[in-house]
Image 1 (tube, rainbow, N blue to C red):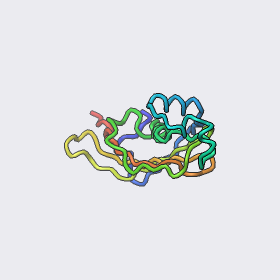
Image 2: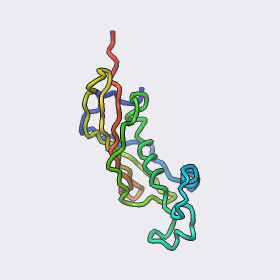
Image 3: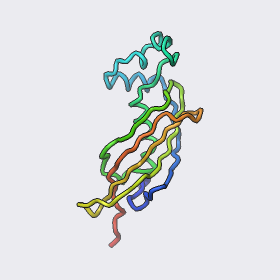
Length: 152
């Protein structure tokens, strides 16, 4: 099981995830179209050239999803029962087509479930950076994590 059990997710643990992922034009176009986000900053190169960014910016919800997705194999793959919430999400810098995003995750806190002894609640902070080392997304995610099964 590649994911970590509740007991392995000690507050203060920081995991640097690999591999990174380069964002393509197809990623941005498909995600933006699938979510019905007609913002020209994501789709229209001519419009975007006249903005403060000088080019199209990647849909921020794609950026959030990518950062969380990059973390899954090392944190929750096969050991989670689901996400309970996403809090304190920020996008301090834009992502551009061609940027390579790397993610790290810190375990902020955890507690045992009050009603189910086989699980616990963990708060993760995901931080995504681009190839220039600029922070592009931060997010606190609360997950319900399975405890390691007891051997009989």
